[in-house]
Image (tube, rainbow, N blue to C red; front, side, top):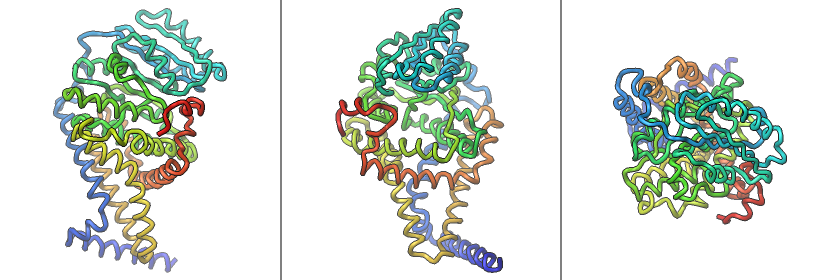
Length: 451
């Protein structure tokens, strides 16, 4: 016990010494906080100024533009992708059936691999009867007997859709009753090319993993994309909840094969923007969807291994030639390079190398002191970021505050995700892990171009 107390006192003294050095010399701060200064602070500044702009645009009135109704009610087509959700598709269908939108809602439920997923097919067909009794609602169940993957299902639904807007949705995602109404309002601006909806974790109370994901979604999706949208810098439109103009989506060829189809499509939309400079990608914080996050460490690790490996594939295998000013413009290119390519692909190597180098070359007391100091600095940055989002974006602060009690764990969680991303990128580099994705069967990937 005495040895532990002595070690802790040494760590505290080292932290005090290092902090004094940082306050007295900017070069000491740069040496200890290079990643924070180069990446985190500029991104936080962009997002926070965007959130302040969002607050000014909607007015200081808490209700703001949430009460604005559409001037017209076009037909919309909701493509609901189903695979092995079983009865879970019923909730998604129910939430679309009971939307408060007075216009026509066409729901197209595409059952991928229906031969092997009879439970999902039957659950979807049972919902058809309920739709027949409601005005302005239609449900079409499309069984794809042979599995073709997400992209195949999306393009099948797009070919059948006759709505002015297409909603790409997951079969296990539910939606707030005003989701369609809130999103249609945004598309009354003719310059809105496509939009991302606001995803929240439905099973947030199930485990520590889901609570941390709920906080992560709050900060990165609801707050982060609200801020980025003000600068027309949306980095990705989620595959679980994206909204598109049907004619433009068909014009650019719909979705493409392989994996990370959401990021692939977003990059192609950004290239489309270059030819139409007035158009922009939007984020709709008031259009809310609810999805289940992995509730175990193993489940979360599996999900992020796929996500992070896909980022490397899309940025450096498939789209490396398209990230240039002639196709995306200077703002889009620079932001994609800094906070797409570098942050998603290079930063995990920098963080992993920095941690290993520090512990390999420094005395243990000094290395631990630096780690604790970095933790406190990142916690302060996350807390500042969360507070600004709470003030500028949240319409129900009490819901946000219930997630923010987990802020002290967030820096550790984020570091763990970065190190996991390093493993995922190496896996993709060495083994081409995107070819083993669960999003598409091997026989579909084999027929596509090999990047």
